[in-house]
Length: 416
Image 1 (tube, rainbow, N blue to C red):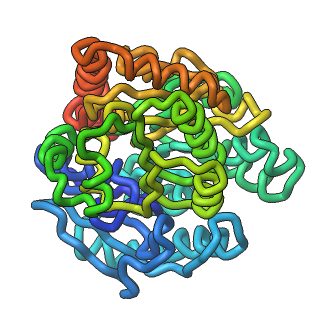
Image 2: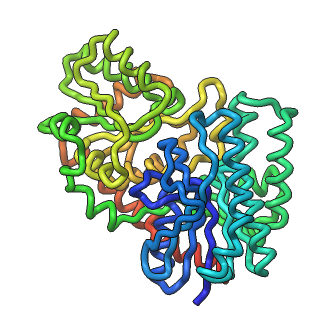
């Protein structure tokens, strides 16, 4: 039995609210006879709380599939020095405990290091070389490029230089490179000059069966949300309450729709720094058809978006068109497309998968009037025509993003 270690700081089992990419791959690979060990932080980036405060916590997910949570330092802000300390701590803890993990769960044949942050690559590289395993670098966000493109830091910033050197070094030393952004190869191969033969696109996997099991489980939703959904035309948003995620664009669009006396509701389920600002906007503009709620369990998201008529997404840093020109990795967009609702996506680049799939419509970022017009258009469509968007989205996800399809690709990249 071949063993793969997946080192991903921010992964977790869905019940803990972390990123489910590795969980979905791990279960599918385990089902196919591979031994999978996912190594993650015991501190949850999304809730800023501990999954476990044990130094090392093991969780058996399925036969031959384990999660190993390592206790790392905590932080309250995603932008502060404490988060940077947490990243460094995770790398060090992986290197400290990899020997114990190898003795208990088997030496790896493949080690995959997964960014967001590049220090996870370093830990994975060292483990791979120690055990003479194949080293696979997975990238889901181009740090530090995105900082410079987004205007957060200058190219001369020491952290940009440091992470840039790690990125180039890792890409040159990796046996394989996986990227999940639609056009990520244009950056890795085109800008950094990495040979194309070792670079592979593996997008965000979708466990369609698990989604379908939960889509009718409205009892998982808080009572307030259940009542809000009843007998309504609903536009839903699930995720971070951030300006670049378009939450104010959506509320402004609702203001336009309410001025037209259209019976359209918007529900927001998530968390983020704009939450109080959203409440303030609703109050000051006397919006009657908006509900802003906190984070809901990941298992409850399918029931929310499957009982909505429209799912809304938005991604752009205002005035910074270069930030997402290579695409993005947003698992929630896959979930939106698979929900059966029509997806409306505020994204600058029109070759995005929402448009390509036929499962939704693009709108101009930061243009509330355009979003309102698109919502009104979908609202006025006959139900049979409106549902065609959802049907096309579901077909596209099953064909291109189902975990079964992408696991085939993962096996080819990692083990062959």
